[in-house]
Image (cartoon, rainbow, N blue to C red):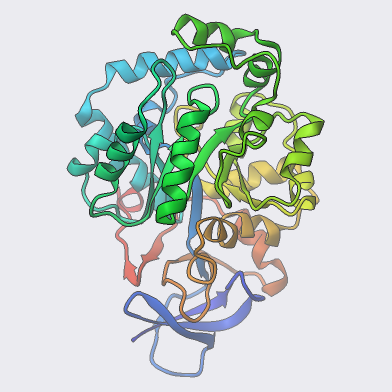
Length: 400
């Protein structure tokens, strides 16, 4: 048993507690509460809290920071991304993933939901330094893929691995048939499914009006455009009943009023990436409306191809700038308990409670309980103490 003592505990699932302790054994929290005088590792004037959970990331593109300048067209960004991808080889991508992991760890992230675009590289990657869910990316933008090929590819990816899921990329790159195949696979094997949906105005214009820069780009790439000109992206995917219960929907930026009816009463998680949203200069994100509809809101960073850093503290502050009246306690739920709920790990991840994983971080803290959440959201700089599964991590970014 290891006992950790801190000036403040922030369990997330319960109010802050001064002079607290957390007892850890076998990678799990066994007990916690006010320090009772027992021998402990004293972390000092810090707040001890659950590690953050990044609900959407593309670690393959971590080497692309600053390589694509923001521009007015989402289609142009896609073209530039594809150009850069053709310039990189397998070694570059393996190094990119490692670089991304280190950046996440340095910023207090202990779990990440990563979209893996090159699953064939998995055999070359060392064990990740933080808890990772690998989502196998699926597209058939040019050629429709046979069911047996999709399932065979997915199972090669899953073999011998835990914490895996499927990610049919987006309605503009993935057919409804492939979405259905992914849904069936996820339902059969109890895996999560994540997809990009309603990401941009250009996607909306493509599906509703059969025109625009994204429409023209994909048509030039040989995509069959016969499914455009009527429904919104949300209506096409959710109305088409191709998603499993509990699917993770990333972005959800551009919705028609009728789309909200389709979302009502559904068990979906909405993943917002505030700094990426700002990078593209998108309109207001309907945060409060998603919350009123009872949807589970989480935060992610997306990739360094559309963000400056993989930092959930920066994401929370960016969201707070646009929603200044939103309580910091609720923001912290977006990067802890809510993403845990999204992958059915509620009570086992993203909180300090008995039986939860000992994934913890410590931040400098000199305030009282009433201001602790606000101080956490405003944290800047490296996170110098991180624990994943009961193991303290050496943060190379801090020591470099």
